[in-house]
Amino acid sequence: MSGDRGRLRTAALALAFGLLTAAGLVLAAGPFPGRADAYTLHGFRWNRSVVGYSVDDARIQPYADNAMRLWSEPSMLRAEPGGSDIRIVVGALLAPILYERQPAQANVQHSDGWITACEVRLDPSSFFDLEEWARQAVLTHELGHCLGLDHSRLPSIMQSPYLYAFSDDDAAAMRSLYGQQQALGVRFRFVVLGLATSR
Image 1 (cartoon, rainbow, N blue to C red):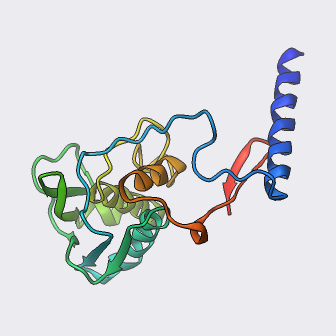
Image 2 (image 1 turned 180 degrees about the vertical axis):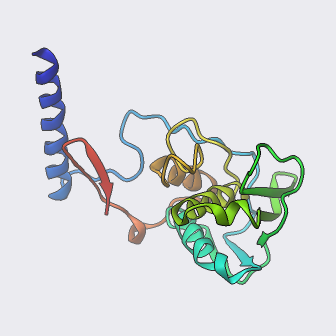
């Protein structure tokens, strides 16, 4: 019986927080209070606020555009299609290959704490064997490495692109590296009965 009361209390608090947020009385941008960010950084980043990217296969362009939009929205970093800073190519992966049928890898070049170039390689067989949602998630994950992120300890696209979507932790990592997006990019968080969504 006490377990039911605890679940009801949690649901009631979540509903109250959601209603206060919807009414504009509470604004939570980023992780919930009391939760430590778990992202990990490589220790290097781009030394400019605009990074260009290109693809060598037109089938990849929508995935690349979606991924770079996700990564740039929370931060001051701007991503421009057609540039040469990040190249996304369909081709055989380079050693070391970490597991059989690995679909992609990011090869980051850096010097003195700054990223100088990055190439994401997409295996021509393994990558296109993935379902569409997984292709998007895998490319988003690899582009996160190109921007300076390592793997996360919390559920996020940088922990596992097969299990999790782009998260507050991923956004917090980008803000840490490239600064906070100004007021126009604020997202409101609604919590209803324990389910969190961003609008």
